[in-house]
Image (tube, rainbow, N blue to C red; front, side):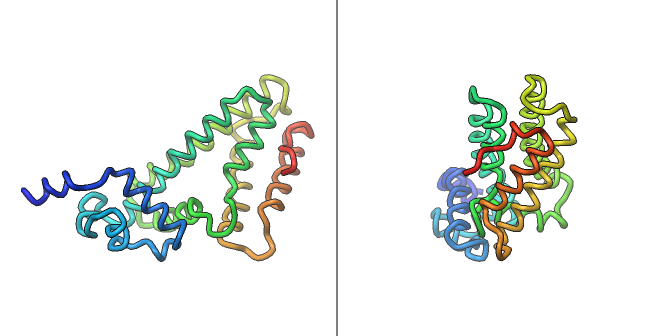
Length: 207
């Protein structure tokens, strides 16, 4: 018991551990993230890390939730700006699409979803909450544009589902490094789709 108390007192803040895990993924990829290596980064043993996170799967999921929390704050700031809906839609798309192959956030996202085949209901609910936040924000943005006459009247929920399916498909291809596919090409395809679905005035401007 005393050892457990000391471990809790000496452990670094949870956010420091998650930030270190994300930094390791960015620098060395998922293969470079081990419990022993992460422990050395934050001054904890791999046993202490397992005490707090129970498994590497849980560590990865919590790291994804932490990263998504930061993205969610950035997304909220972008979407709450006093700007035309089409400009905020462009910002949403730009934030959604990975920077390029091996984008650390998308690398982690893909790994967590791959491991989710063996996850329990609680873990699946947490993953669904991540997706739900992106979806709700997009639905609200589309609904605002429709109500203000900036966008063509569509079913905001159905349209958001299709937009995110398009973004997911392209983003996965870019994140895994599919040859011949560049980020600017993806944004061009998305612009065309949005122009067709919502009207020519809603397409995000070219980068």
